[in-house]
Image 1 (cartoon, protein in one colour):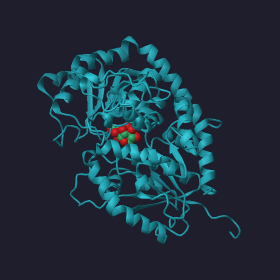
Image 2 (cartoon, helix red, strand yellow):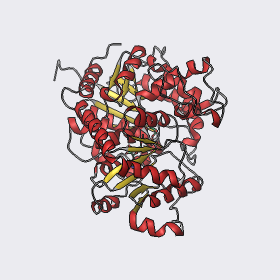
Image 3 (cartoon, helix red, strand yellow):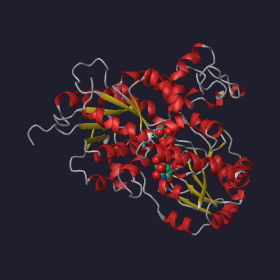
Image 4 (cartoon, rainbow, N blue to C red):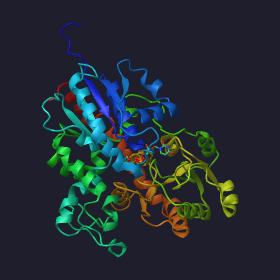
Length: 473
Ligand code: UDX
């Protein structure tokens, strides 16, 4: 209609990994449901995987203005594109994808009505802050916790003060005293995984720290977190990035605001739903759910230790063993003969689970997790206590917060011998069950409150939508 303002049009572009695509698709759905036109940009490889294994095309077909688009990552078709090759992937994005994206943005390739872009926060390097030809505001979205972002921002001070690098295994228990707001909390062991290097010029450390420091160059920063969980740290980040929206947990906001449907399945792997039937036959609170997310890999010895620990614990377990979880193998792992009976009696193993549904199932009493941020938030919302065995990056910080700040479980960081696994499973599921269930239920309530009308994430999302409609440059 004449005189009516055109609907805003947002481009969303995640890093090509499951944990990033998953949460940025949730953001895409939230914005679409709020009446905003969304173009979701993916690499052809991720787009193929995503559309092959999920109903994502059907789910988004209800938004006539929504569209998927692809842009090359510049890598050869047979490149493995796993996290082990992160430096290759980023280098290729910088040399090949960046100039193409720039051309697309300048030439109106995504439509002349494009009003803003939301890039993965680790993609700051894709758009130069002083590029006057890119006329739309560029927002950043970080998939990780505020507490991990704050430690990333502190890394240069830690290097300056001589607290980094870490001097080997015997140095891991040393307390880090100068991360503001976390003075008596973090040991070297709890610093982001990429700090475990002898050379502070290490590629991953430098890349993640630099991209995080440049967050203030974004028009605004969007975080998948909420005030009652990370309020004091969010305030600290706001001192550097005043335009900050904390709109998490995204999956809970989506349900609370717009839909009572079951989870949106944004999976890059085929989901095995048979485990839900298995769960239906287990007593309430009896099952420990075990999953290490989408990028963790481990040696066979570690897998076998976990396996013994789970069987020895005497508890029922549902375990996600991705076909590529064991380093160097790709396919089903054989059950060691001595574990066959225990696994058959008490276990269920799948290649990829419908995780949100699993976590909210009443048979599940706890979550042995790698502490990826999506998994952590999903567990918080479902009110399930956690045992944390972190793998990389943000996960080391998240797991310390789960155990020592939020009191939502136990931190098993860096050990996974069978005795420890069995002991911790029983501590969580039996000995200290009441205590952990109480704190998990309290945090789940706070999460739900934050995404309900009047809650902090609900309000921040409305503010984000308004600012997308009328962005101040
Ligand atoms: C990693 C980081 O660790 C994480 O903190 C960051 O936000 C994104 O990159 P990832 O290792 O994949 O992510 O873990 P996580 O953030 O927990 O995301 C995994 C997602 O896959 C979750 O949304 C989870 O529900 C889903 N999932 C996992 C399944 O749907 N089924 C499974 O079997 C396992």
